[in-house]
Amino acid sequence: MADQITETPHTTVIERRGGGGAIFIGIVLLLAVLVGGYFLLNQSKNDNARTDAVTQAAQQVGDGAQKVGDSAQKAADDATK
Image (cartoon, rainbow, N blue to C red; front, side, top):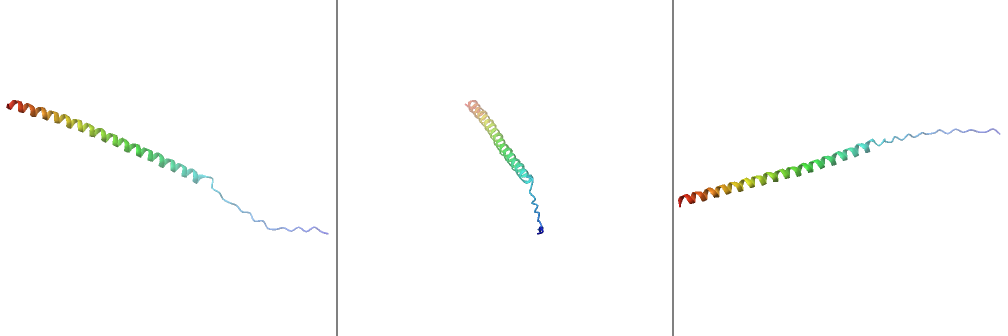
């Protein structure tokens, strides 16, 4: 009896998979957004602190002007008596 050899065709399937580059880019973008948000929030806090300082300085100038005005009024009242 002779051996029978039957050859069947083979199908080769090649799957292409990403090397993780998209995930890496996504993580880098996420980090960039987080760092940018951090700096924006700090800038806002610094602007508020600067505004508060200017407001306080203006209030002190106003208080000083009020004292000078009161002193001048008192001096004028004393001069007319």
